[in-house]
Length: 224
Ligand code: SF4
Image 1 (cartoon, rainbow, N blue to C red):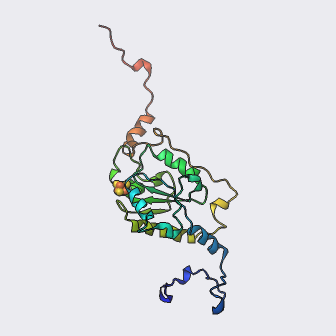
Image 2: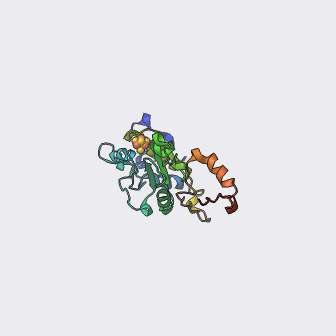
């Protein structure tokens, strides 16, 4: 990086201390937030799972041409307990969302979610399908949305850089994972009562407010 392209706000030595030029290669004076965030942003381990066609682009981003190990991300974890980032890459079906929420709950803090593509962000081309959730953010908090159908590897890389920028702004004092209050788990949605077709919400509302039909009013078939 040349002097002219350097972002002074992103420098490691961003404090007001003047370090003599002969020591600058060996000594860094920085803030606790900066070094803490720098460590986390440079070693985000994604969870190894994909849901549909977007997952192919995610796999491509991990391969040698785009190579997200430049972000310290090459260690994709098959276990949610060792993952920092959930990349929701593909169509989220109503059958799958309980599993996605369960995996999210099993990830340790600090954890992040990236919604990759139109399907994960809002249902995409299958939004009107009876079996598709119109956006994973209806159930779990999303940090970064990457548009596209599918997003290119470059777009995913941009999303990952955006996540790094978000991490850069966090302060360890305010982070929820150091709070004394326990972090509540997200209730696992149940296929049926919790997950319904939003187009039928009026009909469902009417039906749930209807009084049950009593046995007396049910017409009994007359015998011939
Ligand atoms: S956004 Fe497009 S490419 Fe991605 S899972 Fe949906 S249909 Fe497939």
